[in-house]
Image 1 (cartoon, one colour):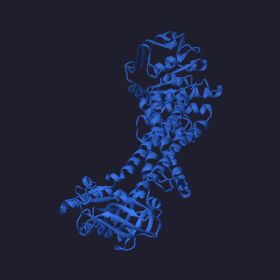
Image 2: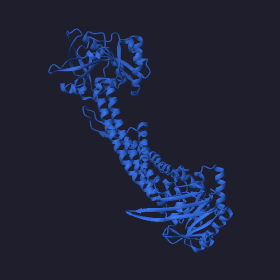
Image 3: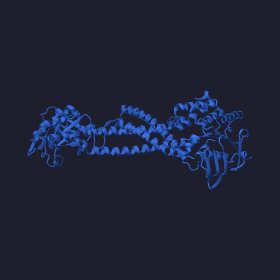
Image 4: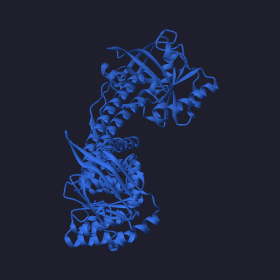
Length: 226
Length: 408
């Protein structure tokens, strides 16, 4: 599913070159539920951005479903994100001018799926996260947990091969976070979608099939290798 | 999808959108007002010149325009009645009338001045009552009455009032001296002071008697609307060619006498063009700022849209559409406000001093034409679109990872 080889990411801060990721070699198979753990600034969000094709690596190779990603054009990467990836963000990142239905429907519109099919899949995804009675609500009218459920529905609606969740419970209280984690786990069980989550929350780590620990841009521990 | 998103985005920050709409609308109002004022002024000047002495179209014998100044009686239209009858049948022609001009001396007994006379057909031209503004007295009455209308400046220079007696002295067609005693029937004024300072009008039949001539120099044609001038000119040229008449047709703007008004129109239109460019630039700069603000405030959202799979071109389209919608709304708002303001100002009127070369004062209005409205709407749409190009490009070139970090 995912194969990285010597993945490096550096940033330029003025004259200083900061290396965020140092030669990451990682392999994730289809259907895995992987937690990428590490303290703040360890490089886990950068790794997720690279795996999600939102940032290009400085060096190294990244393959998704045996396709080399680093050589793809901007449009091809956009299409790949729309068709094969789903994102769940720490800050939910819903479009404030759209209601729940429209936010969830958006990825399907990008893929130019027919209206009837879009509606069916959107309603199903919203039902999966338990928000059917909120479809006309705007994000500002929802709680944090509800917003994250909408974001999860939006990530799942296109039946992606891979869902990338960047600290999905970091902005939620304990009870809500637990609800979101259970939802993610249930959906993973139901759909068998590959899930990669960044976290420093021990609860998420416990739920994951595999924990990849990162420190200073390097993988220091991978439970799959133990 | 982008249309719905763009429409909602322009209403999300209402105060900023309102400021943008005000900037666009104000530009549209300024264009309508300035354009309408200049349009009204130029139209009035043009129509005054046409109706005072140019006519819309004139028919001359070939060679008259080249040699008529030196040999005014070498190129004449003999028996013009049939030609006039045919010209009247051309669509859009209100009337066609013969004219015969000559130079001579005008004497009151105490003073004598040179002048320029125009022999007109009083029955035709007076019926229209549009060829000149009468300051005092009445229009010429009979075809064969020894009566004259004097230009305001000419009458003033000689100290003549309506009802006074006057003697006209001129050369006949063959060069002999001839004179006639006339009465001053009225004093007229046009928008051309130079014309009023030297011109008198008298019945064509009297002019022909003085000149011992049966012919005329030109047929002056007036139309229902000035806009039909070029069309009528072409129709008349076809008519003359088909009938084999040795005459040529000139539109009012091709006449030497129209030089001042044609150049003045070109001059003011150029000034208005520069003014338009300034308005375009001011509106574009003011809305570029708000469009840039819109991008800066939404960097995180742009990152999200791109992370979800929106192409860079889609992001640019979204911001360009927002510009288009702001332009359309600003254009409609500005157009309506401009029309309302123009109507109010036109009802009140703007008292204008007499322009250079004229003695007439007038009340200017704001002429709202479809062209002016179209120009204002085009400006609104184009400036909003132009102002959106750079922000749209900036938004579409954002680094997705950097943009997403703005959400945190």
